[in-house]
Length: 358
Image (cartoon, rainbow, N blue to C red; front, side, top):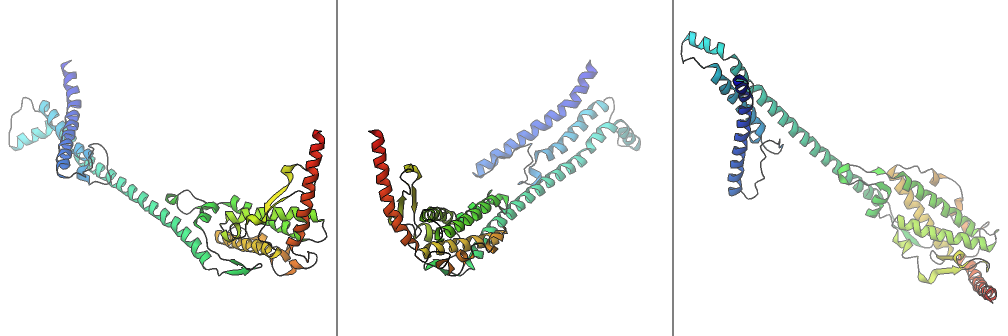
């Protein structure tokens, strides 16, 4: 039993003394530093801190102190019954009986080297992470800057209706059309769904304008598609942040509430704002939005096949939208009869509603 206690003591006591000694030493060091430097960061004895030097790592001192204590504790039992003899025979005997203590003492060298390598690896990892974060942030802001510079290279264009189309890219444009996960995640990915949705809306606006201006159709169909074109055009201009359309061309004086049929519910009436006051305003606004969205698609590398299609070419370019098969009259002239008719249709609906009540 006594031998078992000795063995247990030799195994545990040096480790315990080493740990307590290092903790006490670090505690005294922290106390001294806090008294002299108010901004001192607490030094933890057994936590690898890449921001501090190797001498401030508790594991380094443990790798040195513990083998020394094991050497003396085991040596205490190995040297019992012997006296000091500084002779060749005495040194040979010392080496013979001290094989295990010396072996444990020699562990301090590889252990301290191991701690140093682990500490260096940890520092390298932190440096790589910091470098990657910096590269990601540089890439993120470079992408934003590149978009603004890309748009900044475009000159202002005057579209039909004397609409001055500038190509100033609002910062929100980057947030809406790219998947922004923050600067730390690097260059943002293209939001393909947002681009696809915007191009589809633009295609719908083109078709609505084409039908709204087509002279062979009943006037009611013209009015319906004109309303849809205006509503979607304001929406897409808002997404692209083009205030000269959704602010300058959106006037309360051009707010319509048109009833096309007295049998329709009030919820089915056409309620919309007109884009400007003329056909030229409508077509010019569409072309401006179209050009702006194309530049954005080209910058992002999104498919631009829609912009190269020849469908409804007269709506996209030239002045053919004022000649056959389109109306020679301005859209405002087409709206006036619809507004007058709406008044009669609403009155008829009220009369029908009252007669049903009676």
